Amino acid sequence: MSANPPLNLRDCLATQHARLNDALDGTPPAAGRNQYHRDLSPVDWHYAHCHFIEAVWLGERLPQQPPEAQRDWHDLYFPELSPKWRRGGRLPPRDRLRAWGNERQTLHREWLADPAIQDHPLMVGDYLAGFLAQHHAMHLETLEQVRWFARLHGAQPGQAPAPPRPGADKGTPVPDRDWIPFDAARHTVGYAGVDAFDNERGVHETTTGPFEIAARPVSNADHAAFIEQGGYRRPEFWDRAGLEWLRQSGTRGPLGWWRAGDGHWWQTRPDGEAPLDPDAPAMGLCWFAARAHARWAGARLPHEHEWERAAREGALQATGQVWEWCDNAFFPYPGFRAYPYEGFSVPWFDGEHRVLRGGCEWSDPILCRPSLRNFFTPEKRHVFAGLRLVRDR
Image (tube, rainbow, N blue to C red):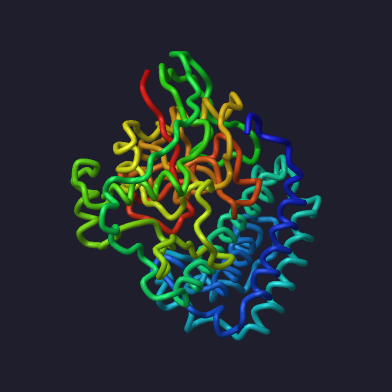
């Protein structure tokens, strides 16, 4: 993860079209209209939304294109105009939706190739194709979250971890981990490539260090030890907001973890249920829990600049398996300019959203560059997230 590889952005968009088709075709029509979690829209809505957003940018934002009779779609497919709980019941039948998607994909590829629009600022360097491809990749990852919750709805009763067994507070020893040291130094963060999102533009220098960062993310075995030692019941590891979240949610472990009758941990994932792999990165953690685990371990979460520095220098192992929570809030880089529209990043510079880095097992490679900044509020557990530890030196 030491470089941002060159991409053919139109090929990337074609790949996302194929993946969208596969996701829709692999979902039974009735299930495609279901909402399994308040934060997650139905599968069929995501499919339609991606094609609608293409139609908006190509049919409405590029003045060279013919006018489109798509205003009727705004109320359903613009997120801000369509509450999640209403979306499933307003979707067209599956056969109509699939045919419409095929039609839009063909038409939009023709529009992207139109010589008359290649000098438009949105088209230079295939920016718009790259923006749309990454937009779709994020929605396809969200579809894996939908699949996860569909499985959780059918998972074994008591999927939340049971209380620790008698004597479990003694815990399971966590093996020493490899730490990668970094001295204090100035280094570059950000990305200026044509496929960069507005919030990662503004390449600039900053100073981090001295610190040391764990070579690998926190494992399932690590977090199981945190649970066994009462980590979810010991207030000294949690800040005030985290304790309030614990009280309201009743959470006692990662999303998808549960104990079988013999006391062994199992995990529900988007692809099924299996015994918990002790060596795999822990997943299903919110920022509050990640921060509490770090305190229990005598460490902390990294600032995103520390994480990016280590990633660019090739020091991190097992990146791209889980999103990794960073300690800092999402913020604008120096000289930030919203592009291609105000709402992509600006509303989330609110001091509440926390940064995640690195991508996960279900992230498309186009979202796994070292500079990419994901962001969610601190209580979210459904975003395939874990953590990596940092210590000051």
